[in-house]
Image (cartoon, rainbow, N blue to C red; front, top):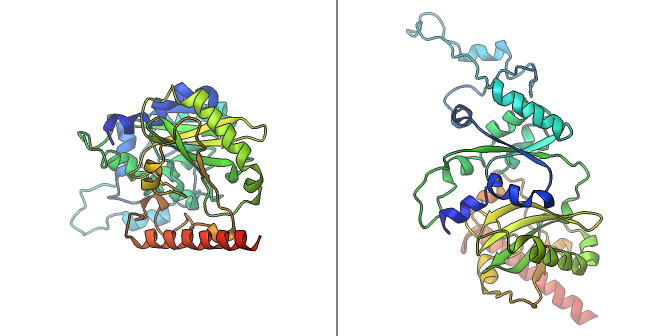
Amino acid sequence: MKEEEVNRCQIQEWYPKFKSVSIKTQIHELPESFIQYLLDDSGPFLLPVSISNDDALPNRIHNPEEEEDYQVSEGSGDESEQPLPPPSFPELELKIKESIKSLGGSVFPKLNWSAPKDSAWISTIGTLQCTTFSEITLLLRASDSLIHDLCHAYDSCTDKSLSRPPSFFLALRKWYPSLQPEMEFRCFVWGQNLVGISQREVTTFYPVLLEKKSNIEWLIRQFYEDQVRLKFESENYTFDVYVTKDERIKVLDFNPWGAFTLPLLFNWEELEQNTGEEGEQVDFRIVESQCGVRPGMKTAVPYDYLDTSSGSGWDQFLRNADEELQQQIRSSEAGG
């Protein structure tokens, strides 16, 4: 993997090319002071003071009684030290407030590559839906998975020369409460050929996909040929799509091949062995029964960080699950 391949998958790079076939998004370059705020873990967990008086955790984050624990008592020898003022980013907050309004009042945030999925639990509604600057900041500040974007984006690059990108961006994406998780799919491109498609939400069995599988595959293949193949310049990569009720395809994201990207119902080796020559059937995998459900992503650590490499405990677990599924399929076919 090259640095340029990773860079192409940044949302501020790909979104302008695919704006017409993606979901509505507003993108803001973040000041370096805000990035340092996200990285700072030396003091108390404080949200920025909101110029709109919007607090993601009212009476909690800025509660003076709780902040007493961080104040220096008299006679400690540090009398000269004064508590630092809470952070504030008024210009950024105003821009974000305008974007939220233009996107219908609700958004979900994403940095260059990643969304703070691991911190959804801390929001008042348990999702990434945000209506204020404070709610967005809370999700970003509480996320461990965003450390990948901030510090480790190029760790898997063979030509690594950067420790981080020169600039970070915040993408605010329109929140659609009616989106159905079973209609999201990850597509795998190897040598500019679509070689695989996987159900994105692998923790649930959706019977409706058994009925729609052939049609969904055709829709995605046509979309790749018409909208993606000639526009995205990498040879090997993945992209996520959503299939709407009226059978339109929306691009949700692009990711590098391998590294921190999850292969979901595949492994990278078998995907690379699939030549995916034009005219051949793409390997499209869905969870075909309750026995095929994969382990939940809501684990003690972000699912993207789980060690699923060859020989790991998770790798063996997933292989056993695959073997059990194949045995069930063979038994079903023999009985039929």
